[in-house]
Amino acid sequence: MPKHQNDRLQGTLDLLILKILAKSTASHGYAIAQRIHELTGDRLRIEEGSLYPALHRMMNDKWLKAEWGMTETNRKARFYKITPLGLRQLEQEQNRWLELTSAVAQVLKLA
Image (cartoon, rainbow, N blue to C red; front, side):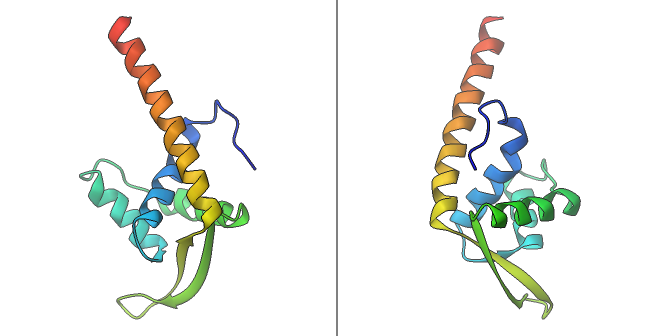
């Protein structure tokens, strides 16, 4: 289901997760959170209470699929992979994010 145009800031986590999964093989939740943490130079830390509900919601929206597997430390975990529908959603989310940040930058520059 498409998001409302004004729902951009709330969708930031979706955008980050989709982007991480688009650039990697299947990953478990902890690895996704760690990758975001690494790529942002420790500026963003995704809490489990936000991450896992987002992953489940994106699976329900058919943006992700998941399979059980073993982690590098031999723990059972769900591994998430982006779907073709998720790739289309990622493109839309990226475009919305770029529009939003451009508009905010314009206000900051001119106000």
